Length: 202
Length: 226
Image 1: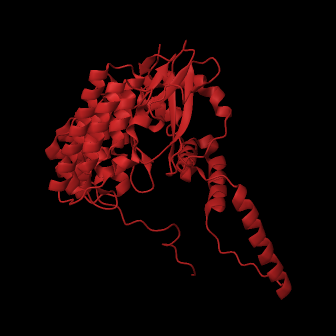
Image 2: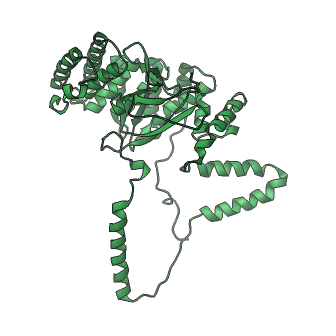
């Protein structure tokens, strides 16, 4: 996997040489463990662009590698034998946004098709990034899934939380209200292609 | 200096809400935002899928006034006439050689037009060399007094120069629209080449360097900006 990312070429001129050497090692090690490595390169590029001192860039890249590791572990313990890079990245995003490893595992385990663990974790991470406490985030996402709501309802959650916040609710109140509603609203009929329900001939 | 619009006002600017949908205390801010963005409205726009619902809602509101009942009723009948599905039967008398010629012309037209047509918006090819399909996302920053605004993030290798925003006249509003690939993206605006500013309208996470990054995720079947 590391062969796909030429770390020195990507980072040359963007970060100090000592950062390139360390990031290369971190990337190789991560690739050997089956982790996605692009986020690590991106974190180094970000540090360089922001003019962050070398030691802080290195620390941030190492911390992110730890989150990717933790995410992969949580997904495996949720029953995904070989989680793909997309799901691992989404789990790390959720950890960065404030969820705990156990909560990532819980959400990955609760996720269902067609949304899947990666999108479920991204919804949760976005909610947490909006300021919803991790516990409320997990409750809202789980209730929405368990109530059998459509995929669009799950993907709509960040927008709906933002709307409630705009009306004066705190992020926690917004999430709690939507979680209650998700559990009580009737589930809509299955999607029917337009016009299908109409009889063609009298 | 940057200015943060209320999230509901942002939805107004995106066409998801009307001024009438805003709470009273936000209407003045909404009107000001619309005034500032007026020059942008000269650009071509795509009609919102919710347009039908909004048109019908407007007609229903107007129907409440006795003076406009007849007008509204007529409009509703016209709307029903336009939108109701109908069975259409077309009878043609053609000679067999004409059918063959038409089919050949259709194949030729498909080949010629197929080469020159641009990809549809929903399947827009992501920028920055990626061949993955992307979702168009519009970024807006109100930064009066700024000489230059750019956006840098995981979608452009955190390049501070690669993706400038365009000013909307002298209103202080800067915008750009990018095709983003599925996944989560972190970003920030760069004002005058040096000042990193998170998007006031987007969720944010710790960047690991003591600042905040804005986040946008493209997720779900078909791709959707969260």
